[in-house]
Length: 96
Image 1: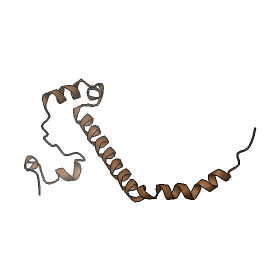
Image 2: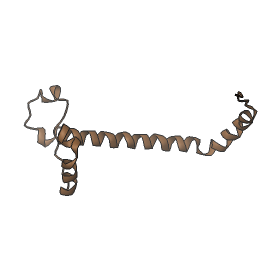
Image 3: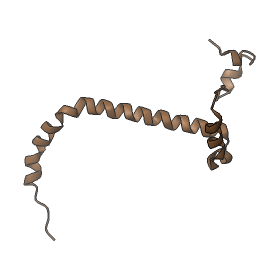
Image 4: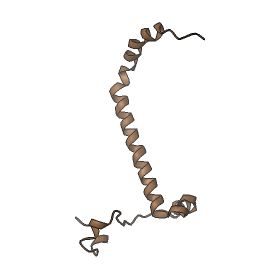
């Protein structure tokens, strides 16, 4: 289903455009902060917003992975520590 905003675009538009124009409402104070950032002036507002959204989604995915790892190994931590404690105590470090 095509977005209404893109209904006026020719049929080949999707095939050659890697970015899609979207309309997003941003409160004025946040827009002022975005526009005041040196990176916005350097790369433009769209690139800045794309970068910010990408960073947010990457961080969110990392948090989801971390939560899954904690859920999988959370209760096993003590067991794993007990398993290697003997080995760690027996290690001999070279002396200078």
